Length: 185
Image 1 (cartoon, rainbow, N blue to C red):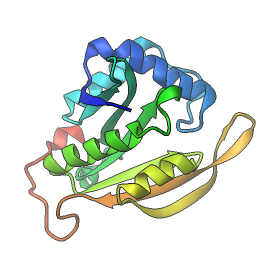
Image 2 (image 1 turned 45 degrees about the horizontal axis):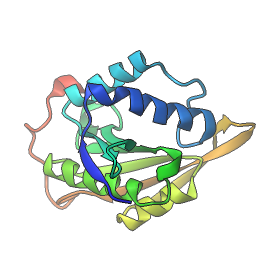
Image 3 (image 1 turned 180 degrees about the vertical axis):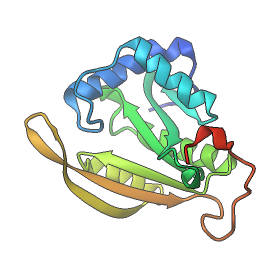
């Protein structure tokens, strides 16, 4: 599949909302049960980009958005400010064709450039394809939380994977990279 990756814009929110809607209704990557409105997706998008995190879309050869990904705060406590969580969602027709791998590689590169030191994947349903994509990018399995979600009439496990970015823990991070106002306590 021929792909183009670029920063997401407000004009992309209709396609992003539809991709997420399908994942909420039919998948286990998210534990949301009711798809959020486009207005809610806009609010989430604006929060992520206003805090300086990358949010990107993947377009197929005809210019149709087939997936999106973003990095965001894992937790809002100050000590977590060098750790990001990735999220990737794909249209059904784009799954298994390299779009997720391309989006993840792009996020890893961007977050490394931004000075983050660790990236974590919280994989709903311990989905094997998502685990494989993250493993191919160098993520290591850190654990599985059993029966953490109940969706589609069944209990779901959550896999946790992690990747060191840049120097990782080999050196102290610069203290002035992320404003404390972004975090609590």
